[in-house]
Amino acid sequence: MMLKRLSVVLLACLTLTACGGVDPNSPLGQRKTIFKQMLKTSEDLGGMLRGRLAFNGQKFADGAVQLDTLSREPWKHFPQVREEDETSARPDVWEKQARFQELARQLEVATGELVAVTRNQPLKAADLAAPTDKVEAACKACHTEFRNH
Image 1 (cartoon, rainbow, N blue to C red):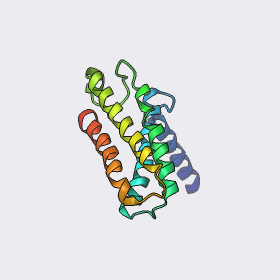
Image 2: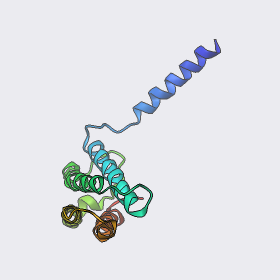
Image 3: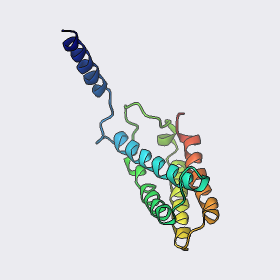
């Protein structure tokens, strides 16, 4: 009997938790997914350069290409009018579109430059630090201006 009650309570909790999620097909859901992929990829690249992960030149180059591809995706999932969903984006995203787009392009340029550096094989971690730092700085600049922390 106790197991039945526990099962019912657990099922109810899971059901309620599922109700509060973000629709993965909504603009917010799509950009959150992309940003999470970007974060994971950039953490792996930074981890290789900082010794948290073993450096592997081919994996680094592949990750740089993936990050470059991802860096061009989230912007199309910011609708012209701010959605009503709970978002980490500040209203400035919609109020200062030119500046927001400028920072997005800076990130795309930085990731493109990182990819270009990875074409010089064999890769050396020391040669990748500055372009990786530039990508991280571009991310941070946008977060500082346009994201609620």
